[in-house]
Image (cartoon, rainbow, N blue to C red; front, side, top):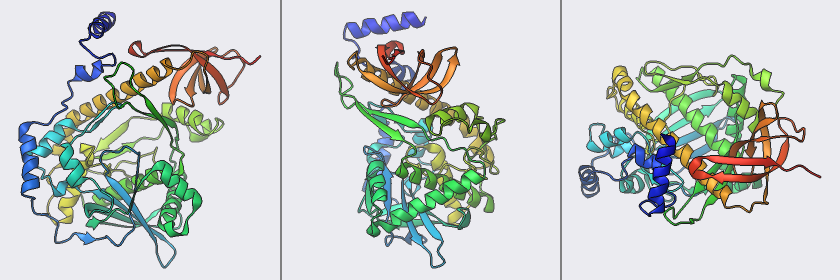
Amino acid sequence: MLKASTSAADLLIEIGYFPIHVNLEFLKFDIPTKQSDSVLAAVDEIFEYPPPDPDEINRKDLTFLKVYAIDVDEADELDDALSAAKLPDGRIKVWIHVADPTRWVDSSSIINKEAKSRATSVFLPTRTIPMFPEKLAMEKMSLVQGHLCNAVSVSVVLNQDGSIAEINLENSTIRPTYMMTYEGASELLALKIEEESELNLLFEAAVLRLKWRCHQGAIDTPMIEARVKVPNPDDPEPSINLYLQEQSNPAMRLVSEMMILCGEAIASFGVKNNIPLPYRGQSQTNISVAYLSYLPEGPVRSSAYVKTMRPVEMDFRKPLPHATLGVPGYVQFTSPIRRYVDLLAHYQVKAVLRGEPPPFSCNHLEGMMPLIKMQLRIAKRLYNNSLRYWLLEYLRRQHREKEFRALILRFIKDKAAALLLVEVGIQASVQVFSGAQVGDEIMVQVLEALPRKEILSLKEVLST
C-alpha cells in the first residue's frame, strides 16, 4: 500500500500536479492554514473596538526593568522575556515575563475555541501555521522591542543554593529592551560587559538552578539540534538554510533554566491556591544516572538517557514530581501564543489573581486533553518528518566525495552503529569497520539520500 501511494505521488509530481517538494503528510492531515471568516471578523472587532483590560486595576508598571527577549532569529511570535536584579542581601531575583493573550481573548470567545481546536502553532521548515490569527498574535499579543506590552510577570527570589525562596505573580506592563538571538546573547555573556549586568545575573541564576536541579536528580540531556528554513519550497531547487543549535550553548541554557523555573513556580502557586492546572510529571527511570556516567558527556550520554525516560504524565488536581527536570511540580506557562495548554494555565491563574474562580474545573480540563494531545502529536510528527525530509534533501545535494564528521552514539548490532552527523544534526546508522568505539568521531560519506523514500545510506571513510 505504501509503495502504491508513493508511486501515485511520484506520478502526480511528474505531471506537475504537485510541486517537487510537496509535503504529502501535511495534505493528509488536512491542517487548516486559514482562519474562518467568523474568527477574522472577531479579530477585526478587537482592533476596531479594543475590549477593556480586565486586569487594568491591578496591572503593575514594570517598565523600569531591563527586559531581554532571547529566541531564534526568525521567531514569529515572542511569548517570553527575562529580567534580573541583585537584592541587598546578595540573592538574585528574576522575572519571567510572559505574553498575556487572555487580555485580548476571553475563554468563551470564538477565537479561543478555534485556538483550542488547533492546540498549537505548527512549525515547519517551509512555513508556520499559527494557533492564533497572525495579525492578532503579532500586533496585540506578542512582546515587541521598545513597545508597551501586557504581560504576566512571574518573579522568583532564589536562595543561595538555587532553590526557590519567594514567588510572586502579577499582571504587568513591560517594555522589552532587547530582542536577541541565542548567538547574540551568548556573545554578550562571553564578553561580560558591565553595562549588561542584568544579563550576567540571569546566567548566574541559570547556573545556580541547573546545579540545584541536578542535586534533586535532574537528568541533563544537551543535544545538537538542526533547524532548517526553506523560504521558497515550491521552487524545483529551493534554497535550504541550515542552522545548528547546541543546547549546551550558554544563552540556550539560560532561557531553558528560566522556563523550567517558571514552570515550577506556577505549579507551586497552583498548589497554594488550589487551582486546577495541567500539571506535568515524569516518573523516575529504573536505570540510575550513575549507570550511564561512563559515557562521554554531550549527545552520546544524552541519547542514552532519553532512551530510558518514562512517558510524561498529567494530573489536573495536584503537581506530580518531574524526575527528568528534578522539580517537585511543573506547569507549561511560557508559550501561551503558540501552545493551548499554556493558554489554559493562563486563564486559570489570571482568574485567581482577579479573585475569581478558575473558569475550568479539573474534569473540564481532563475532558479537553485527548483532542489537544492528538493535535500536538500530529504537529510534532509533521515537524520531525518535514525536518528530516529537508535534511536528507540537503545531503542529497552535497558533492559525493564530501566527508562528514559523525559521532558514534551506540552500537545497534555487531558493527552497525547509530551516529549523529555533527555538522548536519541528523541521526543515521552505518557499518563501522575501523574499530572506533562509542563516543568516537569517524568520517563518513553519503552513498545515497532519497528524501521522499526516507533513505540515507552512509559509508565509513577509513583512513589510509
